[in-house]
Image (cartoon, rainbow, N blue to C red; front, side, top):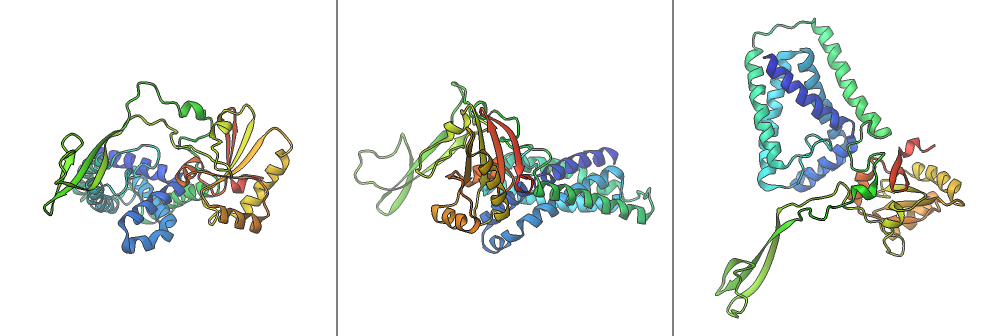
Length: 359
């Protein structure tokens, strides 16, 4: 019983904590799930933030309860029920791959969908064992004391998430964490393996469609008519920790190298979606721009929003700093805030701040 209890406690405490420190990361992942499932699930996207906090808090509560033997019998049952839901779900993800990364350990550990399913199958074993062995287990604390512990554990889980949302994650598992040398993180070794693709051609003859490979398709046979082609990745090659950073200015010219290889300081105000960005935060960043605009330091606001949205945002907020564009997923990965401020010096990220901390 104790072996099962400690194994499950370690898994759930780790899983709950790495999600709790990064509630926006959990939100983005749940939104991906709801979008891929479609239909009714898509309508739940406004609740993704609250679902992310509830999930991380619940996992952390299960783990801490198991560790300290709080409501052990009840916790064992909830743990097994949780795994009986998650295991079939991860099997579905492994079979149909609606999202490439399950997010079960946040950004701390990346698992493929098949690895996640196998992990859940393994965890099912101690979950069942714990339920079987806790049938006659007696509580070690009085009920009201146990409920006090539960309240404390829930407060810890929710508190960590609220802190991460209002500031930044207390532990940054992202590739753009403070101290990262961006050019070094973008480097790809010469002999690094590249992605391998498989292309299939679909041809039709006499009303019948057939798939061919690149080597076997009817190149010179005019009786076959081309219909479509499909390309899929059969094996992924090496990817640098930072492999998707492309920033363009208002003239659609890429300025990424100017930023990461600059000898001076560059401030990046990251706002992945201007419609969701804090206007108060944007105005606070204006003070940083005004302070440094007559120095050698550079300042750019980076967004995935279009030109019309940028102009409307300028009118609403009165900001005057220059805007650039980048991919929204990249911007969400750079900093968990909207807006968030990043300081780069000689290609090294030397500081990151939530807009609430810009002052």
